View 1 (tube, rainbow, N blue to C red):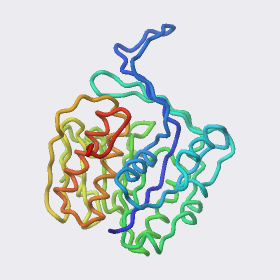
View 2: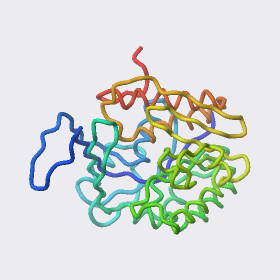
View 3: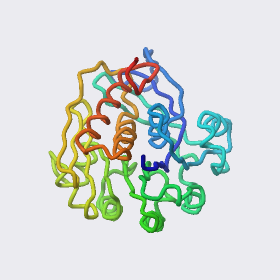
Length: 299
């Protein structure tokens, strides 16, 4: 199996819901579900890899507060050498809604303090050679993002393929943000975005993987995650599409991150594109419909 690594955002997630309609200011709403857990796109993908039995590297950071110590404990041994940023850890409160959508309230916290030098020195590049590096939280890890060109160059020098999940920019998809994302896309080997992000990037109401593939370096893989409708991809191995099974959603937070992990885990085992997409969809569907969250079917 080819080696795997993930780099990016790890934060505290407080998940509450479902809530509807949106509460009136000054009121109190009782919801049936709550969970405090280590979250963020990078952590969500790492948790899925752990459940899938993958061996992987993981570089992120935390704040210097109690939450930071808790997150490092939860993600040990991967987090033992992580840098610690002075100050509070990033906290994200996710409000889920009955239709499967969610709203996040997130503090800036520690994420912007993660640097390229910390990532460069935190990865064993020789061991990662010929493998996949998943980048998450690009619009939150701003110090690292500013040095993405150096990261991409280092990856290419070691034969490491880079997969990018951009996430949603807090400022929205304005012209400058889109141009920045185009610059990243042109240097990655796989772009993994949901349909809303794909529409914003391509400025198309109903984007297809073909629209994203034009943004990538030659031989790149374009993936659009469509939630309850499954996912589709276009790459050197052809075109793939997989519908999602009908499930009762318990908690949709991190569904795309779980897809990313399962999809790349399959590619790292030289699985064909169609089966990699199917594994990503099946794994994410199970994860969002179980509590406590599961990633593999019960024996």
